[in-house]
Length: 256
DNA sequence: AATAGGCTCAACCGCCTCTCA
DNA sequence: TTGAGAGGCGGTTGAGCCTAT
Image (tube, rainbow, N blue to C red):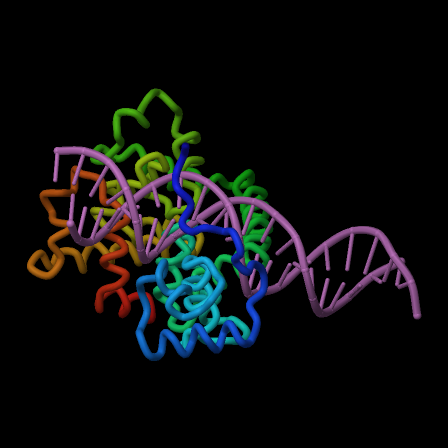
């Protein structure tokens, strides 16, 4: 009944890892390499679940793990990537050498999320005065070429649509059911100078500029078959974004 | 010095995706 | 094409540490 557990939990150690277990796992992986996690505990002589071994190695024992405080630069990058990708911790971690998804997730939950909440409450106050950001977002979703799937375009007003896409940049629509990302023609036309001159905040301009770079990079059809001009009427899924982030071009624009 | 409450982060859980036979 | 198993992922938990009283 139900799914078979990944391993027999009877007689297995749980909780914090001992120094001996760490050493045993490290020695085994140094000799035999990563992978075959299910068999690894038995082969290595560890009384642990394979998943537990994998997690311990990836999050703690790997030699390239960077320990210590997150730098201001890393923090800025996490902010930007989270704004773009949402809670895609592994994707975010992929852009921060030596950092793990678990570490970034913890850091976000304990530090950055609070600051974002504070910033949002400040922004709400600001919005009630000028409605600048709201206007820009509404414009984005009213552009004629916005790709809106029929099951989302069900008569909700713009505000509700914006609420669903709060974790990505304005001009994007995130379908949380399918994880598809939709882009408005405001961004496709790259009218960022207008957005800038209209007085929207710097984060908005930075966010849209990043996506402009993304779209320009994906114009290289030979090297980026995932996203082509003919696809503009189709949703851009996050795998495409992931592909870009993991490409050389992606690294350049994130780091620069 | 004792302790209650808050915080951090390693570890676990369960679901999802990918791979391969 | 399909189903089982392995790996990967994000959310959650709880032990241990820190801080305020």
